[in-house]
Length: 65
Image (cartoon, rainbow, N blue to C red; front, side, top):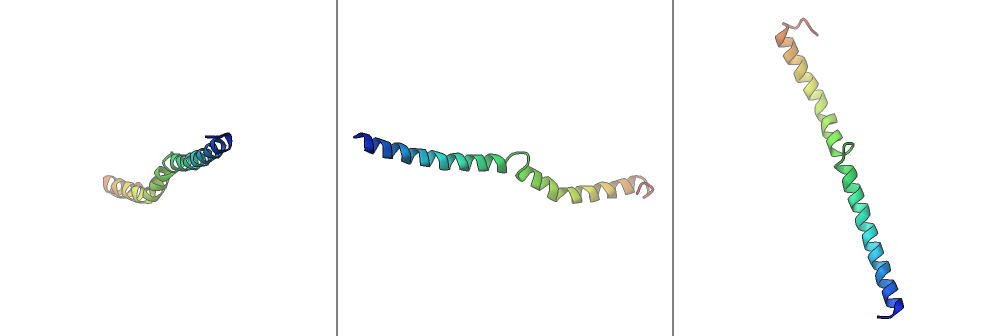
C-alpha cells in the first residue's frame, strides 16, 4: 500500500466517522431532556392538568376552581 492509497483510505474513514458522529449527536439531542422526553410531557400536560382539576373538583365539591 503506497502513501497515496493510505491517505485516501484515512480520508474515507474520517468522512465515515464524521457522519456517524453527527448521527450520534442528533440521537443524543433527540433522546435528551429537551428532545422526545420534553415533547411527550408538553403533549400530556393539558390532559394531566384537566384530570387534576376534575379530581380537585370532586374532592372539594367544586369549591376550589
